[in-house]
Image (cartoon, rainbow, N blue to C red; front, side):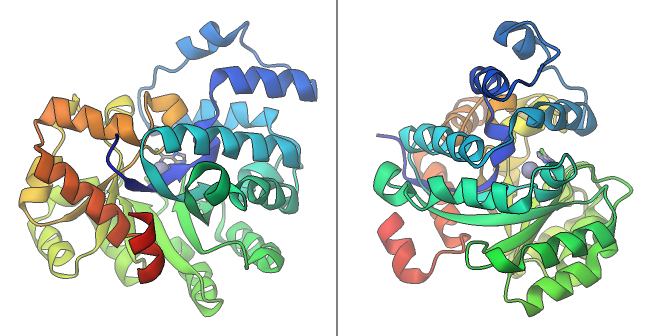
Length: 319
Ligand code: ES4
Ligand code: ZN
């Protein structure tokens, strides 16, 4: 039995496996510039975050209808359940869809079709987190937030993702203030490729409750001390870091040192269809590459529930 865990850093668009991509392409009459699933899989060689994002956005062309988004989410939930995931806080990128003519309502209603049945069908409780593309404008993010108002009963929080360097958190100050006023929870990617100062800014300017990745905090001892003191959860994604060359090899990943420093780390899958594994695969990989013992793995699993947006009673039921 895999360890029960919560997944807190998961882009639903990043769960699009090649087989489903081709199935949806055929269903929607979309041409993909790859002959077959093997040819597509061969394109999964990334130099950095941007080289991955290029493919990630390109493949989204196959997602067009509510049923496509429901199928995508159901496929993820089934895989996650098999790996011990009991709760999933799922990111989605509305602007990546609205900019190609797919309405926000199509995305949210489609995902919801799967999510509202998730507890019964897969034994997984869920939350939805709407992410803004940080390489798009703050105005576009604000328009997206306004467009999401009819769906806020289904959306727990907001996040910030896509190309990090050159797009500091402060760019989205007003959007995060408006989201807070609407009662939305706040997270943001920071310190994946961007500098430690972006982590500080995400905390101080955006008021985030968790930092997605946050890996580069290790370069700033004063920041590490603060994150420990304030018990700020970090949603680390070890296999993602290897595939996007944020770390050289998994054996070089700072996770053990981060846990030893007292940081509240969690292990997550990010874009599992692209990076070689789901949540359980990430746990297995850090266990074997970094020699984490049973107690450390239990700590990571416990942290995942503590850092989740579940209420206390729901949290106890999930773990
Ligand atoms: C992402 Cl790994 C990563 N980083 C930033 N933005 C993203 N969107 C999807 N995956
Ligand atoms: Zn991510």
